[in-house]
Structure formats: C-alpha cells, structure tokens
Image (cartoon, rainbow, N blue to C red):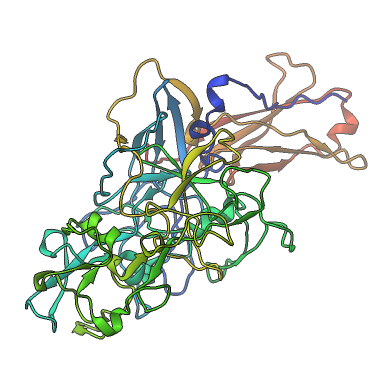
Length: 525
C-alpha cells in the first residue's frame, strides 16, 4: 500500500544565520491567543470581554475577533529586521488581580505591531534614558518595558519630614522614580506580565516566566490547569543536578542588542567556562555591602548611577550625591491611606533605593575576584552560543532563590543607540524570513497504519480556527478523490483524524490522502 502525505521542506539561506532573524518564537503562531480573567480561574477565552461587556476604561468592546499569538511575520533587509506581531502570548494570559484578590479590570489588546530593529547595533557614546512605554520586544512578540513605571514621588513640603504622594508622569518630581516590581507585581499574571487600562499593551518589566518555560530556559515549571498557575523551580531543564546551560535569547532591545535569560558563561570571553547565574551589580541601600542605610538616614541622598540617570547634578562625582531638600524622598516608614488600601514607602520602592557595586569599589567579573557580572545597563560584553565572536548582551536577573532581582531585565538607560520602533512601511526589497499565523503552510506527518484493523490515522499541523477536508484516492486521478471528512475542526498546532474507511489499508493496494483548508473563522487581521 502506498500513502501520499505532506512533507516538511527545510530551506537554508545565509541571511538567516543572524540570531536577530532566527531567535523569534514562531512555533505557536497558528494558535489563537487566550486570556483568563476570573477569580475562579476558569474559562480561558479567545475573545474578550464577553458580548455586551464594556471595557471600563475605553468605553468600547475589546478583542471581538480572536487574534493569533506570538510572532506572525519576519522580514529583513541588510540593515534592519521587521517583526509583525499582535503582542499577545501563546500561553494562557491572565488573570490579573488586585492586592485584595479582586479582578484588576483590564484586558490585553491586539496591538498589530510592525516593529523595526537594527541589525547593526553600536555602543552609544552618550547614554540615553529609556522613555516610557515599549523599549524592546520579546521573541514572542510581547512588549518590553524597563524596570520603572510612570510614577515618581512628589513633595508637598520641602523638609526632611517630607510629605507627599507618588504622582504619574510630569506631575511627579522625577528624582525618586518607582520600581515597577515593588508596586505593580501584584497585578502580574502567572506569565509575569500585565497591561495598562488606557491601551491594553501587554508587557513585561522583568523575567518573562512563562516564556522562559516555553523556551526551556533552565527551569522546570508545574502548570496547574485548574488554577492557571505555574510553580517554578530554577534548575537545569533535565531536572537533575547537572550544570545549567546558557540561556536562550528572550528578546531584543530597541538599541539592537539581545536580551538573554539569567544564565551565561562565568568567564565572559570563554565559552568553555562553567555556566552560571548572572549576578546583578545592584544592591539595596540597607547598610550592607558598603551602602548607606536609608532606613536610618532617610532618602536625602541619591546614588551616583541614579543621579546620572535622573538628571541630578553631581559636580564632585561623588557617591552618594547629597540632595537639596527640594529633592528629598519620603521616609521609608511613610504611609498614606487611599481608598481601600494603605501604601507604604518602604525600602526598595524607588530606583534610588539601590546602589551599584561598581560605584562602591567592587569589581565586575567572574567570582571569586569579581563581585558582580553585569553593568548598570544590566548587561556585559561577552561571547554567547549565538555570538561566538562576542557581542554586548543584556541578561535577565534573578537571585539565588529564583526571584527577580533589581534591575530585573534592563537598567534605566540604553547601552547602545536606540533607533528602533514602529515602522509604518517595510522596504519593497525586504526578504521574507517567516510568515505564519493564518498564513501558515500546513504540513502532514507520516500516516500511521494499524496493521490489524487497517485503520489509517492522519496528523497534520493546522491553523486554529481552520476547517479541513480530508480526501482519499487510489489513482491520484483528478476525478477519483473521495471525501472522507468535509469538516475537520482544527486544534491548536496539530490536528489528528482517523480514516473513516475501516480497513482501508487492507482493502486498497494503493491509497493516497490529501487535505485542504476549506475555511477560517473570523480573526483580527
């Protein structure tokens, strides 16, 4: 018996050797994005909110058509790569809760990104501070924000006993800028991301936990489908005590440099050295590691690195920098009570609550001589599996217990020159590297034949939302095709159907099968 089936054709092109072209997560592009927003942690949906529910911030219905997840399309020129994505992950997003356990109230929104990132990054002679909002893209097409949120402390009195509140944007004083993790982590979903209410831009400030799990980045995770939660353990993916492997590329910053997971070569120039967790160069100003204890002194000084970032004059190039009273931050015990909650301005709330070990006389480099691995931008010059000749690279930072460590993913400034962002057009001569989602070309696996019953089982990659027709023929003649099933509904990533002709493999000396996608459910294009 001969069986005709689809084949997977691999193609190679020298242009695809560049990591910025090959590192994007496209496996799940034909899968519809799903979100869950329920205190009972049930019923993930592909459209949201449910019919008739008005988003409480925009006054409109969001995500009325399902959207495909992760990266959808990749095109490139000699100088730039262009990434199309909806900004929605392929793992189940949500729920997003409040400190009281209620619903956060906001849903992510399909963003229709067409992002351009340079293929020729270069260090910037003068470093620039990250603006608010998106400063890079994860390999799954989700937005990257930096470590801060949009708030800083605003004084209402200029004295050591400062009173005031955190204010958004230009309403804040700007000197004491908040660490997003300290105040927003409660609203992160199990994948460690969330979105604002004004634009639904799903984004990460720190380690993308679910993406790391999908990419098998030195962690095991137990997923509880009933509770939609992950239990993470930092370990080699084998689950043994063997040494970890070098982390994969998790994303790309808008200056064109890669962002890796937490593990790299202990010696930055030796790929044969032991792989180890990258140590952040930042420490809390709690009186250890040569720092001031802000719980004793109050927030009346700013560290050298933070002064440079936030525009505080430091003519003596000192660390820390003594502030005028107009730039003092709140006491670490200061509290304010708002509707339904109490806010504590405790140590770790602000970026300025951290000092940098390099400014305290410590040395960057491998242990034991080096006290830390990463610079103030949260990266280093090093070799990696994708860059054996060396590159500058950012690294996600976690502590020895696997918890996120300041500055979490990126510092407050670009190492390189930021020249990326939204692209309204793509050059006509750009080379298409990948086109997935609803444009995915299906492939069929080798049919499985039951030698006893003669039943044939067909499996093929499919586009979720698609309907497929399965046909069979003995001769391949155009008028000989028999429809076996005219409406096979696709399942995420793979569809499987059993031949409806029992004993077909026994009763036909030759049997050929073909399939075609006959329809596709409405989706957000």
